[in-house]
Length: 329
Image (cartoon, rainbow, N blue to C red; front, side, top):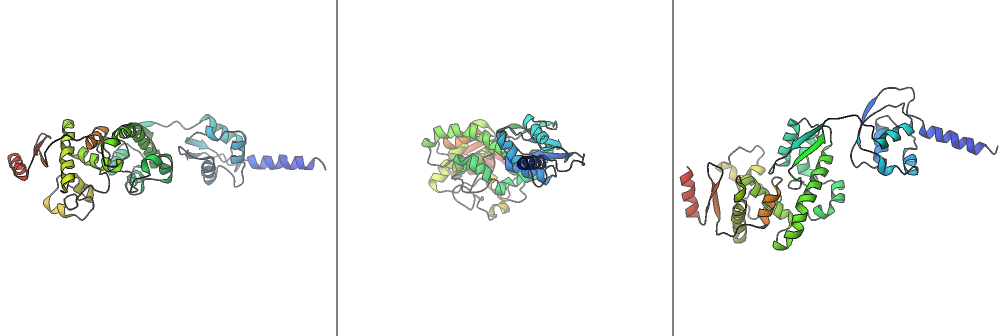
């Protein structure tokens, strides 16, 4: 009778590590996203039929102090795999070999167009990625990058996904991509901002908003500070920015050129009708445009018009601007 509790514990232990179905030898592809907690991994495995309803997965992992050693990735598991084998494979990262695809997201690319580039590159989560423009700042992003997002007045990630070349698996979730891009933003932009914020009255969000417009307007890198000076001068004088790229951002189906009848679109991003900066960035600017937003050239320019070679002619007043426009026509 004294041995009965021991046998009960042995039986209970066997039950808790028993596979979901020892007779099911099928293989199921399971994706463990980066940053998954032990509880989330257990839930994923149970939902895929790899773990039984009652399991010692979390108990086993924590008792063996393996929580930080479980690896994300794509695995081929079977319902017949016993618990120790499942955990061992998660620890040694016995994943399915997957091709890594490089993707270049140029400076000035909006989240929507980033999604199109991801689609072209064969990434499966391109459509959820486009949804980041609406509700992109997830709880995980806010928790990890609270120092960036604590004062952001919107849910959009527009402006915070740093344009660069990245390498992702083709099935990488959109949120994971966003985490990597915001991390790059944290590495590149934040060090500059910590030094530069004392030189401007704008918030980081306002700087990114202005930088995104500069990025869209400037085809010649050397003109970024000049274009920035025009917008700074207009803001100081209470003039509308009257920036065509913001109107394009407001349109559901923007054309290559902005036409006169499109200037009446009812949107907070229409800087012809609304004074001041729009609510947020219209694309994801590079560091040079962010620098130009903080440090504009010192000029008396209030207008500029694009030349055929991509450069701009800058004018002090409306009369000079009209002359410049007539010469281009």
